[in-house]
Length: 254
View 1 (cartoon, rainbow, N blue to C red):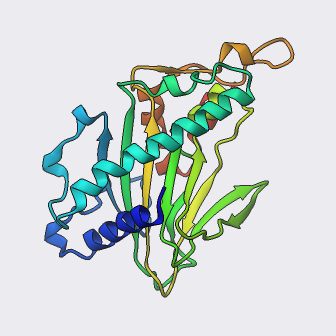
View 2 (cartoon, one colour):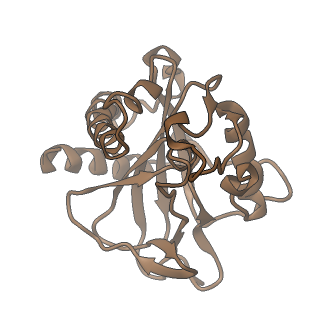
View 3 (spheres, rainbow, N blue to C red):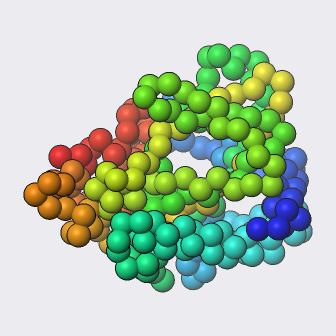
């Protein structure tokens, strides 16, 4: 994706969060279990287009709607390319995973604003979790770091690469690959001096579609490691586990 296009996306996100409070939506959380993160979040459904509720789309800044309408198209191209190559790695039909994102698949955009935090050692920007998605594409502010990945119990900073997109494997791919691919646990830490912005695209299957290991990847030597579950039920589960600080992927492991 061209750096100029990415620059427009980040700039319109920045302009949105500079608007007065009454012109943008606040982040409300329902439930006593939820530990509030140091982050202002704004969600929109962007695909399928028939599911867009334009009355919820900001009218300011003026370029917001036009830019956000174009950006998911380019991200979908990247997602499809990666999915085709992952299917090839597993000796599956190249369209196998692409076909999961059919006309009923859902894509959500989440705009994140992390203000500078006076006590960064006491609160997360976003607490540890994995994504209940097929794929997640993250465009991060290249002026300040904050995203971290966990490996073997150790947290590592994700390096800042200007004008780059981070493609993150989701829980759905871990389940369907029967554990051959891993959905990384990640978090966002806060910064005492600088604010941080990001735009995240969540690619999810049709809510009524079932998630389970691909039959070709299960045999006597490679036993089934995950239970079957509907997409909508798994999404509901991740909200519960996120509030508790646990991982939803653990609820479907055999």
